[in-house]
Length: 163
Image (cartoon, rainbow, N blue to C red; front, side, top):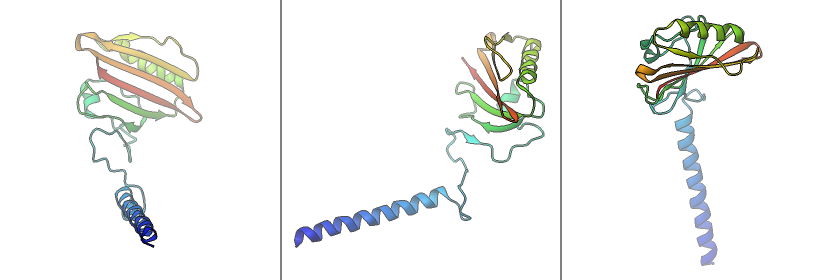
């Protein structure tokens, strides 16, 4: 009889813990209207842009500070900054309705005309993929861009960091 009470007590405590943990998770993950709360309170975790500014691209200040090329009309979908310095780097994901060749040509022209930058053309490029690198050795900066075709748009992925 004592063994049964002990087992029942353990089961009850376990159920209470499961319900309590579930309530905490629900409270933390969902806001009052039942939708997922995407507020990023941890500055070390990248956060998607919830309402991108489609007219300016909404590039981060650290990116603009280096006068890097901003693709005209591209929509910033993801700003993967993990810090406000280049040691940790910047990752951006943008979309555009332009094709891969047009986007690739834009970045090639932009970096060949920027003083101090050495552009490395893509080793492989076709109508559905483009990838290139530019470096500014005197400041130890590297800019990498890949562009891929995705049904009705092109996806632009940018990584910018100090090496």
